[in-house]
Length: 312
Image 1 (tube, one colour):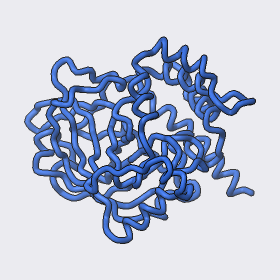
Image 2 (tube, helix red, strand yellow):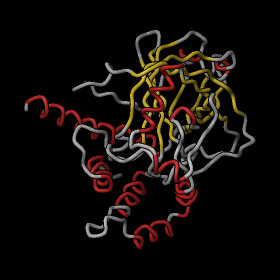
Image 3 (cartoon, rainbow, N blue to C red):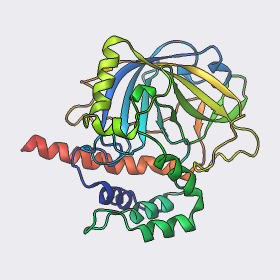
């Protein structure tokens, strides 16, 4: 198992070191919102936020890369992270991205793939031989890479479909248990820009567009879960399940506006996909299980940077 230090160092080697920012998904905006479960949700899980009573949320939209100065129109994954504030004072999180599946199966492969993508100091571009060698040895990475390379620039953060790439075990009040994966479907539908439109946009157009949109009306997503059948892999984030698998609508996420108070100074906001609650259990996915370690290392560096800035 690689160390979290090695993984975060490798991410920084790709995107550069940007003190005070997340190692990945560095560029983003934090918003306030709420979630109300659907009548069907309680049949899937006994989790407190899935019983029908509205709960408060904190939401973060982000770009996937580690460079907070990278223009929004660049080819990049996008993220949607949601923190649910439960009635007993605890919290649970969902982390989702625009990719429907992941590049790698294990932390070891993640570290190897990230190191292969380290830019050459002279050209500023990855060594294609190293990347090609990794892909030849790991064909499971191909679908995610092809999906990402073929994804155009989004017109809005509010008009993207976000996928939870990890499986969870959902336990209902009657004792039944099913594995499932989350997805957020935008109520406004999906929308994209062509290459010329993306080039003409200002570097922060996604944040600007989202702010303007929320000033007129809340942004909303349908939270859904795709339920696994026997034989569907629940530990492998590179494997998609068949489209015909049952999908249940768990509820409606409404994003009401920017939250300028939740993340300031040393108030480090973390969305942890292993932060689950009664009625939801983590699968044995090695990538899922490793993520808190990487987050802790990234948080430590952000906190240290904030402390240095405060002392300056």
